[in-house]
Length: 243
Image 1 (cartoon, rainbow, N blue to C red):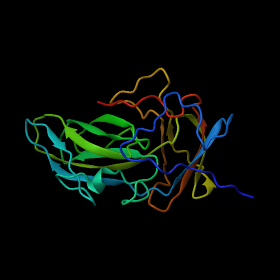
Image 2 (image 1 turned 135 degrees about the vertical axis):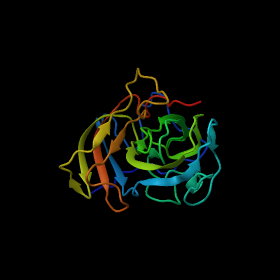
Image 3 (image 1 turned 90 degrees about the horizontal axis):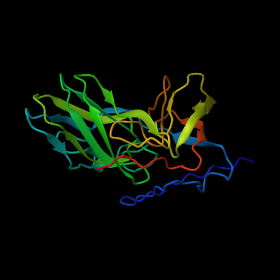
Image 4 (image 1 turned 180 degrees about the vertical axis):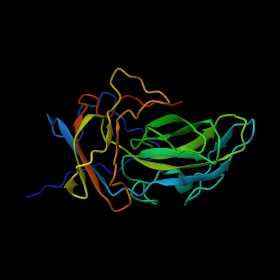
C-alpha cells in the first residue's frame, strides 16, 4: 500500500510561521534524516509577468508598489504581488526566484521586498547587468515592492520569475532527483541552506536553500521531486534578511 506524503498547504497572508531553531514538523518523522520534496508541476518562467517595461527616470529612484490582478504592467506588480508557482490565481508551493532584465545598459540595484512561503518578510538586492537577464537567489512567495536605485539612465526594466524553486525546509544536500516520475540522469543545481552561523544578507542565498532543474524544466506539465538531507534542529533555516 502506498501512503501519500502530507504537505502543509495553508500559509495565511500576514502571519510569520517561521519557528526559530525548528526541530520538528508534522510531515517529518522523528529521527528521519532525509525528506522528499514534491514540487508538482511549476509554471514556465516569465521574463515580464510581474512588471512589464517599468520606465527608469534619469537621476531618480523608481519604486513599483501597486498591484493588478493579472499580468503586471509598467506601474503595477502582477497577480496582486503573488509570484506564480503552479497557478496564477492561487498561492501555492514554496516560492521561486525573481528575475530582471533591462532594455539596454543599466546597472541599478533593485531591492525586492516580500515574503517567503512561511510569511517571513525578506528583502533581496539584485544588480541589473545591461540587457542580460539576472536571476535572483531567494525564493519569494509574494512581493510587495520593487525599488530601483538612482542612476543616470532612461531604460525600461522587466521583472518576472525564474526556475529556481524554494525548499520547504532547510537542507544540506540533494540525494536524488525525479522528473516526471523517473530518476533524472541530469542533475539539477541544488543550493544548500545557509550555514547556521551565516547571517542572511540582501544578496546571499536563500536561507532554506533552492533547487534549479536543468534540461527538463518547468512548463506547467513537467513534475519535479527531490530527496534531500535535512538541516535538523533548524528546519526553517536562519532568519531572512529584511528591513
